[in-house]
Length: 320
Image (cartoon, rainbow, N blue to C red; front, side, top):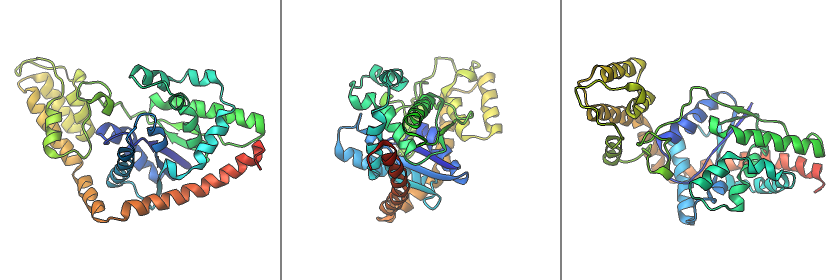
């Protein structure tokens, strides 16, 4: 089974990225052949600083490796190091119905957040379809909010197959029912663009400050508190054992402990959880060529597969 996933280098990675995409991707290394790309083409829809894009791409690679990605098992590469993907995106765009793209939730959501309505933003699902189809991917791990992109990919693949013969295999979404949306400091979905994030590898002082700024209500220390509505407990549950989670839940209900104390416990658990990854990150940084070597090897493997698929596509549509 070939598994594909990607992550945008649009900023410093936070714990929402880790639990939503990175940790599931790292766990999937054991289940099949894995291809993980840094989506720098996609990032161009929002990042306008070339130096920032280059640095962000490198930081994503660094953080992914520090968190446990094994380059002996998984191919890690920059999207732009496989130029065939843009060729395939153009071919797919020639058969993509406008109505299909107009129904894409992500386009509407991004416009609502203030992004300019560019052609690139509108055709984002076509490039994502090319990302998936160019590697003959069998499975694509996604959150529930990304499932529509896989459906669009399958629709485009079916349309190509109906028009030109059997060209593409149909990928399946791989949705982990246990993966939940990670809340940010304000209780909404954690996002860099909302400014409610806690970075994976932020420095200790800043990380503590952000944890202590989690929004809570004004319930007094001695009064029982509702654990089901607490962002603190939701985040704590990502790092703590079942017994520890149950213990904090009971103390919420009992009263006598303030939100500040709960936040301190959350910080300690979070900081301890990422401690081995911070150590690994420091080790990687001491080897100046390690990241470049990993990305080069990953791109070589990705290009080998993409070349084979594009030969098949070009022949099917009449470009050979």
